[in-house]
Length: 239
Ligand SMILES: Nc1ncnc2c1ncn2[C@@H]1O[C@H](COP(=O)(O)OP(=O)(O)O)[C@@H](O)[C@H]1O
Ligand SMILES: [Mg+2]
Image (cartoon, rainbow, N blue to C red; front, side, top):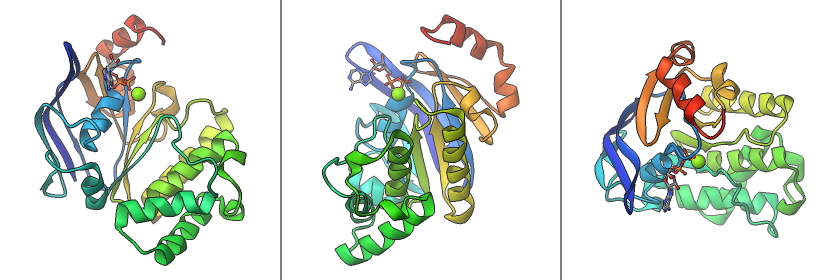
């Protein structure tokens, strides 16, 4: 479904993503981990053309993404959630999610609202549709981000550190929603988390970045036993 080949992104003298190649199959939930500054978010930014890659190729459902604009990539079927929830605090929960449907799918206001309502129900926020986004707690804001991503009817969702700041029970709830989205909405997911344990039990495969390079790509068990991964985490700022 998604194939990156030799993707490189530099910022000045810093190579944030260094010659990284990867593949995501339809229906997979793939974890993307690595210490702080490993290049995880930069890889998402390269895929979505927020910061297009300097070199390499990214092909999605047979379409070359490099050279496309962010909204064109959204319309190809890639949605994302952000590390810091980028919600519009004054507007209502429903309006926030409807924006996802309009941006990603070019829908009319009415169909966007219908779709937004359906996605809010799906993540369990149906009863909050008229509330201001600013009144939601952290886990509900993350569910809102997920609903907004789903509202664009994507084939692939890029999830950036949706688990940070949550209790184990809240993380479990989010994980269940992501798994249900895969099953019932037919989406594939690439899921960035800084902490490996958070996604060990809920991903089919894990890709590990360190200092911009891909150092491992395998099942959670393989990655957990990988020496280079252990060293990268020990050498990093946080474990
Ligand atoms: N827009 C940018 N301008 C300059 N440097 C950046 C930018 N985005 C990321 N970087 C740098 O690229 C490296 C990788 O960052 P990032 O992809 O955010 O890491 P991660 O998400 O794995 O923590 C870091 O050294 C970071 O400071
Ligand atoms: Mg990041």
